[in-house]
Amino acid sequence: MTEQRSKLLETLLEAPAHKIVTLPDRDYGLADVEPFPFLAIVGQQEMKLALTLSVISPRVGGVLLIGPRGTAKTTAVRALTDLLPSVRRSLCINGCTEQMLDEGGMDAICDACHKKVGYGEPLTVEDRVRIFELPLNSRLEDVVGGINERIALEQQRVRLERGILGHADGHILYIDEVNLLDDVITDAILDAAAQGHYTVRRGPLKMRYRARFLLIGSMNPEEGRLRPQLMDRFGLRAVVRGLDDTAMRYQVYEQAAAYQSDPERLASMYAEGTLALAAEIEQAQKRLPTVTIGNEARDLGLKLIQQLKIDSNRAEITLFEAARAHAAADERDEVTPADIQAVALLALRQRQSPGLARFFEEQEEEDGRLIQIFEEQNG
Image 1 (tube, rainbow, N blue to C red):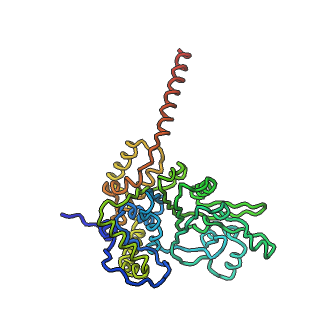
Image 2 (cartoon, helix red, strand yellow):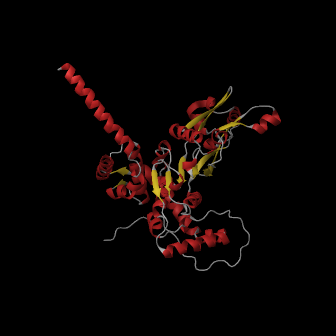
Image 3 (cartoon, rainbow, N blue to C red):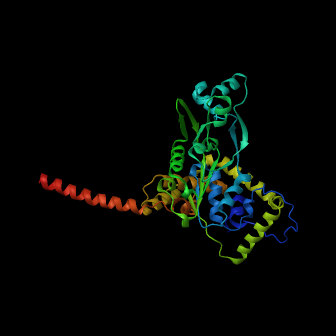
């Protein structure tokens, strides 16, 4: 009996792109406002699976795409736009929300939002999850926020405004060439990602902003390694290689040429499939809370981590959350060993630390010598 896959996994694994037979004859000069369709990306199933699982369950901890230039890493991330769910977005420049009001009272929101609450006006609005891209040339003030210089000069008053990290709360933060980030920027992102919020201080002014975002990064390993602290913050790591099949490589050319000629036309060709995939992802998100981890899947996952001698407990979190998302995508309520196998490479690669293993070995040798000295002294 042939095993049946869900529509979502069927789409991701077996229908990555339609072949473009005829390209449009004329270029009408339209701007590329439409993102490249996710389903038009040829091959790269591992990358597409990792991104899809992270959207279904942000608790997997984000995605790092590792591969050479020109392998559709940035294209794939931007293509997620049409697949993302809805979220409540703050209408306030300080990021105030009804949730903040419920949890912390009036002291948790700004003065402007005090008035909105008094008049019964909403603090948030329903909106699609957005992708915020962090430029490599960003200053620290751009990332965390700071004083609004225009208002300070024009109105002679000082006001703090949130940066990209604050705006990305509840959304996706994407960093291309993440391994080339300035260390100061990296530290700010690490702190915000770890705590889910950050504080900006400028003289006597102080504001705390929420920063609960899904972190997605991409990098070319030829351009340098990623700091271990930031590497550990990415739950899934997808290796993106060039395509070996010549027919698929030519298909990539056809898709790229079609998009450059008329992005709206290419988007319309995939509109029905994109809507269906978005609906499947939404259903998987709704199913996720009911998904449990079976005993066999639990034992297999723990055994893999033990055999790999991985110290970080993030390995278990990422592995089992990704497996739950995979089961939800496959329209099942229990994680099986097959789900563990499907996500194990994504969740566990590059989590071993040879340097740390050497440190522990040396430490055990030193501890052994100390214990021997103690025993000789007490003997």
